Image 1 (cartoon, rainbow, N blue to C red):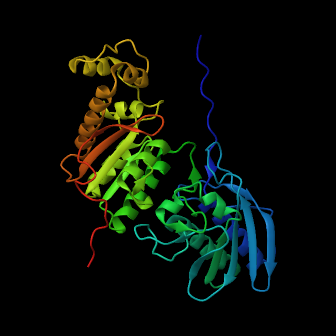
Image 2 (cartoon, rainbow, N blue to C red):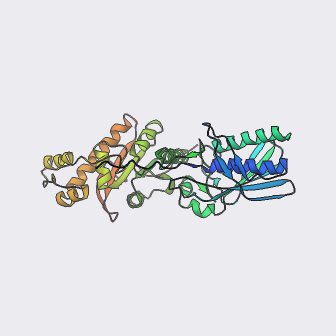
Length: 365
């Protein structure tokens, strides 16, 4: 029987696109005297989405509008939030301020300085362009303060990478293209990169990338690492290792369960179940070469571990370390790997131990 084609996933719009649309609607009211029911903006790649304007408000010298974010079919925690923009004349060009639910940068290493509102450069550029367009249309000076707010954003931010990256008080206003593409690997990898940037800027010598929450807790406790050192690698081992190859730190720990660590050991750089598979014949060969029990008939790495025992986990840890070192090429990074069981207990390690290079901040002048 022929398989039905997978349904096409619906794309959505970033918080940056929503903030831009809200800014345009508010400026049309401030300078034109009337809120539009709907507003269209142009995105960097030529798309022209239209948004419904909700909950407008105005007062002496200011106007404010909201846009409900539609993230399409992406499992985005900000889907359905209201993104609001208040505009008011203020000398100094186009300036930005964080309102309710928008975070503030507190650590170096991000594309914005410490103390700045977490409104990323691309959304800032989009909103600035809208200000210039509307100023020309209505004969006004393009000197405007934009206050972006996301009601409820502070609570939602706890479900994102923001606390780990040192963004406090709310969400980030994100997006380089304005478009949310469902299940975007690029967005996750970009967050890994920002985590590395923050760790390096904070002078951390030791970082860790783990495949999930269980291995992350085990690695963090084992090394007493601080939160900024924990990178949300997930399935994207290649994204982390390739970025560290260009932006190195002194030491890297990779942790995960037996299944995903076996994939890494066999050379996979994307550990997702839909994008890489364990070579069980190869796993059985490793066990056979080490004189372990036959695991040629197994269907999962966990089943192989239950049959062959801890020595198989030791082999996986070492080969995963070898694979990571190969991806890093000649980059001078000390690498160790940790394999955990489902309870979070460490069952195998390969590489230098916790006293080899302490997890301390690098001294600064």
